[in-house]
Length: 93
Image (cartoon, rainbow, N blue to C red):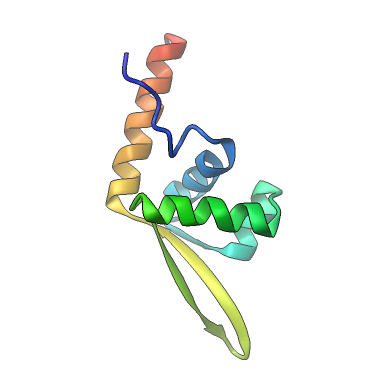
């Protein structure tokens, strides 16, 4: 069996990817709320996913307020699907 993807073998990063696979994109605020994450931890984990090429991070403004949105890349989709397939093999599903 293949080793687990180190970028997806962390709970919060796996959670982020799970949501982004379903939604295609989401705001930082939404991810923070849904994953019950702290701002600092989520920021660090998003940066790691971005560095790995799994997500894109878009910073801008909504009116006068800063807004950060994240979207999944095709590389991220492929990696997530491979990781889930690998998990199923380990669990004999």
